[in-house]
Length: 322
Image (tube, rainbow, N blue to C red; front, side, top):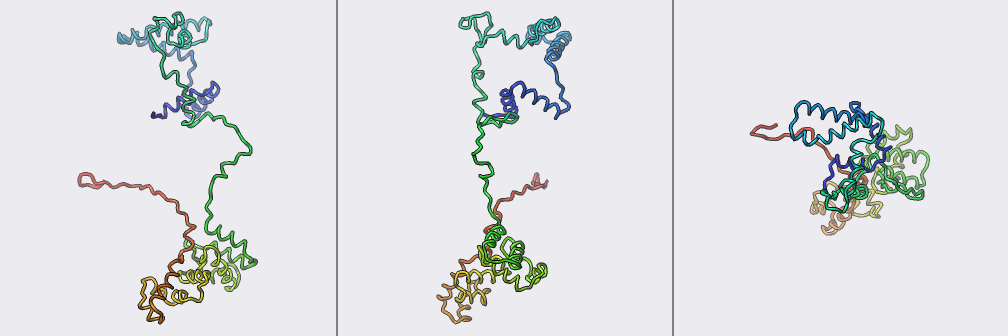
């Protein structure tokens, strides 16, 4: 079943009380100044005047035959309201004079004189059927408030950023004073790859401390998880990771420090001549380098997809680009 916006609005309005409906009407009139409120008596008079004017102008026979009864009812309603006898509208009196089975009040509900059967849609409780599918909108659904129930904020997940992750570990380290301040400054100047974006000398000048203090702070940050954040380049990042893994004096460290440009194209024969080592031994050492991460900060980067909506579309129509 397809629910159009008009149908959804009607279903929501059917569930409102008289007070809620009045408040909704007032709100709509304030929002839209073109709307005009028409009282029930004025509405009946306006409808009857329109019908009488159309009949006087010589409307079609079908129109006259189909609405003579309604015009009579409306005319009777005006007379009754003028005498102060009743306040009910003709539609309400017509509904009161009709039984739930669709027949008149004077007829037998179970007799053969009833010509109309009850509509199947009238028996549907729309408020109950569509309660779980419709937005409550103007009317707020009732629910049981539990003070000890968890709040919505407790279900939200937050992925820590690289700086938050490093600062949390820095608070657990036994550093203080200028070294701690320099470490916080270094963490705040890391890019998405985990590289330090400013020279060490500039950082020392900004912090009004020595270069040795900044180097100590940088050494502390580079040994935090992920290892290698705070390095100036790829070579330094890989050397720190090899040292943290216990390979500081291995052949892999020598290859990274002195022959990094030959490791990328995998020149084993050239490396064997330069180092005097066997090709198979070099291959085993290179495997230690392959498991390292030259960009340790990327695992904390924001991976959410950013959708870009084009502002211009170019289409080819009849040998012409539009």
